[in-house]
Image (cartoon, rainbow, N blue to C red):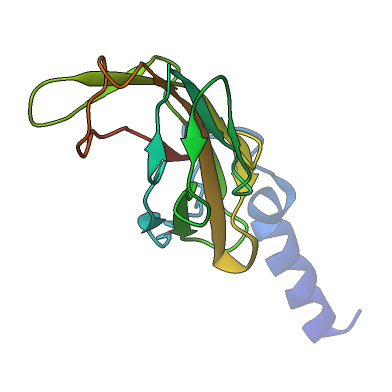
Length: 171
C-alpha cells in the first residue's frame, strides 16, 4: 500500500468520531426577526362651508330641511329666501386610501340668538356612508340637517348661532 494513502487512512480513522458525529439538540436557538414602523399622514378636516339655514320668515312655524346636496325644503308657514342656505362641507385629507369613520351628531343641537331665544336642529345626515376611504388622499363630506322653527313670537328677528361636533377617525 502506498505510504501516502496509509497516512490518509490513519488521519481519517483518528478524526472519525469528530466528522461522524452530528449534534442533534441544543440548549438554545437564535433567530432574527423583522422590525417595522409605518408613519402615516395625520388626518385633517377643514370646514369648507358652514351649515347655514339662510334668511327666512318663520310664519306660524315649521321647518327648514337642507340636504347634503344643497336642496332646501321648507314646511308649514316657513318661507326661505333662495340662494342663502348651504349644507356644511368639510374637506378631509390624509393617507391615500386611508379608511375613515365619520360620526355626526345623533342628538338635537340648540341654536340661540342674543336674547336666548332658541331653535332646535335635528335630522342630521351626510352624503357619504359613515365609513369611507380617502381616495387620492382626500374627500369632501357634506352635512345636512333640519331646523325646527317656531312662530315669529317664539323666534323673533335676529341671528341664531350654535355649533355642532363631527368626529373623523382613522380606522
